Length: 458
Image (cartoon, rainbow, N blue to C red; front, side):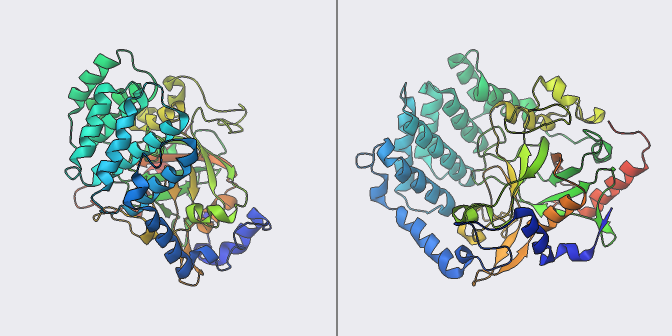
């Protein structure tokens, strides 16, 4: 199926406006018009507001105890530190004081949320500078050794291993001694994230087998091919309801997406990387209020559903409700040559653990607002909280200069994609490809092999 070249321009605004409908009070400006929150003045004011939150007195637990009255203070403060990554020396000791609260046997709901957010932030900091924060490492070791809360032990263990501060086997022995029969996130962390088998290098089965396969007949399939380094852009390609791959101007249609978590957490964790595996695509979000513009941009979001996730009308056509059952039941939906390929199990386990609300969306924030590793390959796309991010760029007057959500939404409309499936798959780079997305030439070759094969998909 071919799309016209004009579809890759901003001329698709009219179409998207029709999908979204008229604006409401408090909604973002109509599509194609300047967005006030994207102007240079507004963005500078936002940065200054976040910077003003970060000061030594703000971390005083005596002045701001972890109570309901101060929860908003702490949540906003920790988010500002996450986004801006300030180098101030007083911050790590202040964070360690919060980590020290993780040993309480019965934390309040507020304490639970603030300590969890602190652990997520600490993971980000140590993943970028493993040797720079010994007090945070000590705090994490204390949690693994003494905290009675499995979720925090899982978060602390992940950070220690990923930052090179502890060996997986050593931590597994400690955890299994403290929690002989772990469940939930701690169990999955030990088995699917930290176990040697889960970290062994793997080569994906033939891409052509995945591209030829259909989860359900007559459903579009969006394939998102990523690198293990999620700061490298992913390439998304689309198959229509008849099993034909969408093209534009004689080339394979594609749109780049970023699947990097701002915290850098593994896929099993809330706000972690976008899990590999299968998702149900089902509908778009309605128009959003202006308060959400910075996070998601001005365009409607594509709704994705993991296995077990509530809210889906029918993960499988004709079967109302979410996909449930065993891993073997999930693997029935996977091409035979990909069954047993461990990375594709991630979406199953993530959904079973309660992850959800993953979306494909744009971005209203200035990309320079977000700190990122110096070696990060992508500077124009914003990291997210587990979602897939499409480019959305503005000039200093708030005028939209480029956007990829209209391209994606237009393509989905043309293939009747109000429902469908999404595959997220990592493809390790070949020698010489490090830091570069999966090439369209590689994907076109795999599509050609899939089309040549005569064996029908499921």
